[in-house]
Image (cartoon, rainbow, N blue to C red):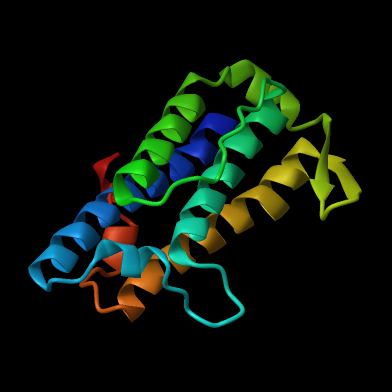
Length: 171
């Protein structure tokens, strides 16, 4: 059996869809408890960590950047301007559409090619597409997705591992 890049990216799609559903639960529970959702969006797990909104933005960025860089296509720029849950959901939807539209053959071919990407303000790093995807992009994607989930849990939103893994068993 040959594992395709699309198969690997199916986990990204599933996790983005789960984050979208988690956002719905967060709004529903915040409304029931008379909590302004903006409070959740600015929450963080620790003082030196980024807030919830930025975690969602970064999860989206790592997903789209991986597809664009490995697939060799145009990398859309999404300004980090979201301040509401509907805006975050719209960003997730744009990334899901971008991932779905990616060329499978280009993604598979890109695993053997070099990918150069920025690291910090003034440095770049080059590695194979396979190493970029498996050792950098995907770990960062899942880190930010799990951190967003953790922030909501820390704030009393009743979600669990099953919410994070939503869709896993729908295959």
